[in-house]
Image (cartoon, rainbow, N blue to C red; front, side, top):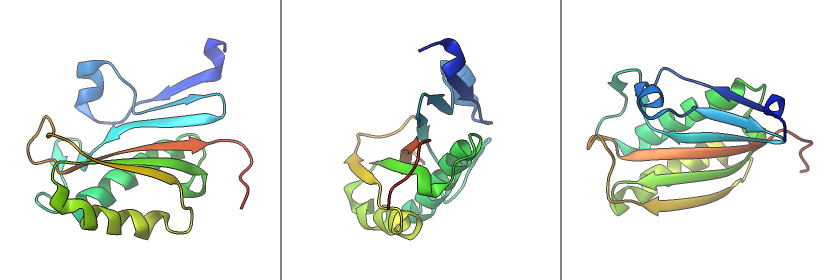
Length: 134
């Protein structure tokens, strides 16, 4: 794969510069979106609310694939990382509202925690840039 086949986009997340990563990378027919939380700049949306954090995080991740001309119908995989098992239903409800018609494969994990203890949810997406079958 040549370097021309890979494209990276950044967001306003300060961690991207701190750790040296891209918000999303397109390589071949795939677009991968890094772990995304409900932070927009320095503001955490939905503090204390896992449902709202999941919705905001997924919306930000979808905006990242939008940089490549893709929409929700292109999403083939999601990953949801939760700080607490008690938040499974709330995050699952947000996922269903967004992805029910698309039905990507998904993995839901409970992790030990996040760098900022106010973060309850982090999400990742993978999208496909080729033809989509029903």
